[in-house]
Length: 68
Image (tube, rainbow, N blue to C red; front, side):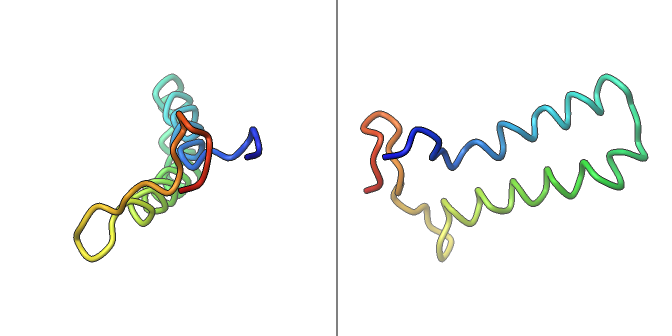
């Protein structure tokens, strides 16, 4: 397993976008750039864990560092 495989990295990185907005209150940045990145990251994670209105089993187990 590669050290850099982490499906949760996207949502974690988008917290920096939100923190930038929270600090600057730059609504224009949020509308033009930030919101789309945050939303697409959240949509990606939802697609990874939900299928037919049911929770999928995890494909990545961080403790074991392998794809199941």
